[in-house]
Image (cartoon, rainbow, N blue to C red; front, side, top):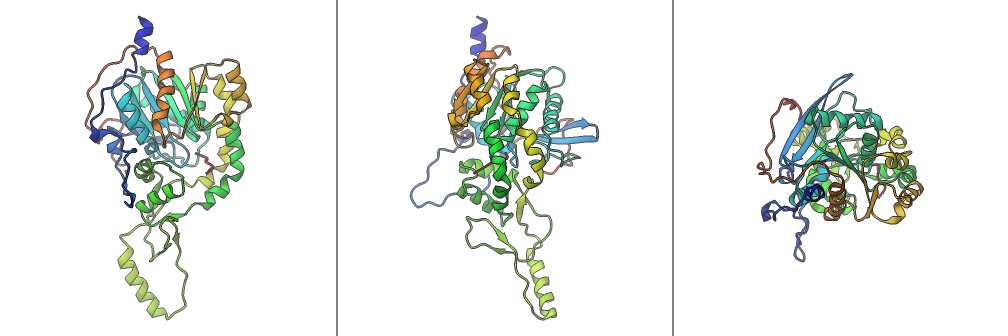
Amino acid sequence: MEKQLHLNLLASRPPVPAGLQSSSKTKMGPGRRRDFTPLSWSQYFETMEDVEVENENGKDIFRVYCSGAHGPVLLLLHGGGHSALSWAVFTAVIYSRINCRVVAVDLRAHGDSKVRNSEDLSADTMAKDIGKVAEALYGDNPPPIMVIGHSMGGAIAVHTAAANHIPSLLGLCVIDVVEGTAMDALNSMQNFLRSRPKMFKSLENAIEWSVKSGQIRNIESARVSMGGQVKKCEESTRSPVVSTSIGEGIIEEEEDEVGEEESNKKRMKEDDQETKKESIFTWRVDLTKTEKYWEGWFKGLSALFLTCSVPKLLLLAGVDRLDKDLTIGQMQGEQLKLTFCAHQEKSPHLALDGLSFVLREVSDAGPASVRSRRPRGRTRKSSRRSRGVHGPPQVH
């Protein structure tokens, strides 16, 4: 009977009304232009919240997006340079099919999180952040929590689990990152980052570039998540010359021309009047400045992953991604499940079987309970919320 209760933990949900389903499978007719307009977080998560945590330098605020009120928690950690919104499509799919709670976190210096020391992106600091966020959300009696991380977020998930920052940890899932491949990619990382556009003329332009360049393979995910990767430039710009190829998404600086001083001043004044209310977009995180932390994220990661005592799930694109430590661990029968599938943004459905396996095998949270949904898009008010907070190769 106990085993059956565990297996019933993640019972399938009834079909979700069409208006709430992810539209990633929607196909366009021949000749129709793809839509690159941004999508709101509220179409994928029920609530948005700013969680305040204490540290030795004061208070930090972390933006979280949540769905669900009952069942085990899936705590989602995004990759470097991305944000919690990278999990939006995944959340819509898994939450519609599995009884659980979903919490996606903007990591330190990413998305809309605000921290005092945004330059400290060490694995140790970010792992402690995750523990503090979980404590702030659930107090001294947290529910069973499974930490799921993609790329850099996967590395932080491993460090969080290994340091026991979440006492109620139910399981660990790492997506698309192993030590060997990650360390090999670091040599070319700076070249990759320098090859990206520095600015975009609009958020739509950034979304289009992300899709056409292949950085985000799911157009729906790009539309909801790019707003967490780029931000408006604060200063006004003086008639920037935009690349005629919108797919490139590059904002080029206008060359200075020699002319009469008075004529130039008049032209600049007119331009300022036209553009002072317009903003171009740039990256929220300058990943080139995080290089000193890259090795700390990934070095020794496979061995550390295998030492974690909780059940583990590793989602990779193929068996060739396994490094020596993971291959040996698999052969020696470690408490590890390997699943080979596509990237979580491209095919979120493929991760469901692996996640369900781990949760069903180890959960002691008791039987699933059916809960009513809060309306999507409602921002929850709580004592943790601060009203003053504004809203290829991968390091991430």
